[in-house]
Length: 51
Image (tube, rainbow, N blue to C red; front, side):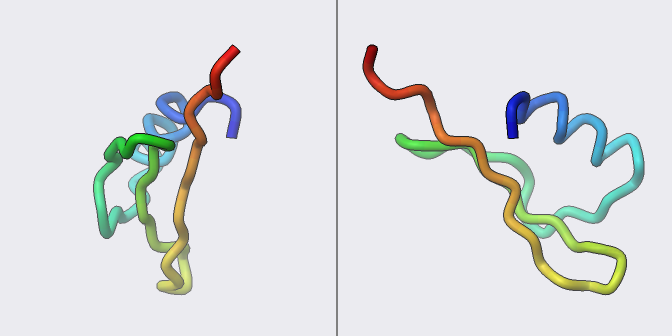
């Protein structure tokens, strides 16, 4: 996704249930949410690579 923080804000505003709140790793930002049927989905954005 292009704008991870905006996507997370939109999901929260819509009342999406989070299994794991957003967190950062050395290579990405990610969060885990549930879809309306209860399936677990990973939301993921890789960090920018070296320029």
